[in-house]
Image (cartoon, rainbow, N blue to C red; front, side, top):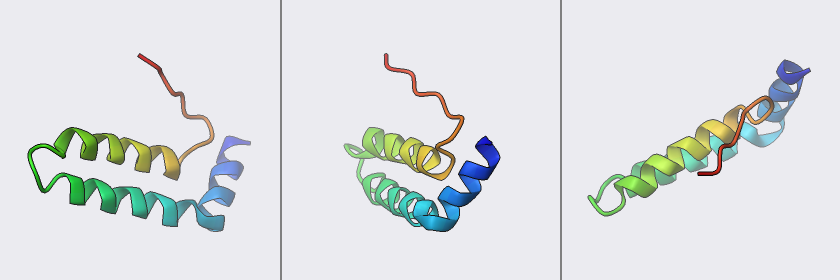
Length: 59
């Protein structure tokens, strides 16, 4: 079921959201101050690409 959900998610707009987060991550990684935020944006892009079956750990 996770695979079907992920495929539907990508088709219905998840890919666009993931690309957006990845672009934000690239822009933030331009400056030294923005690198930690850029890394987190890449993590959000990964989560936006494969949301079903992913685990979120709150530290």
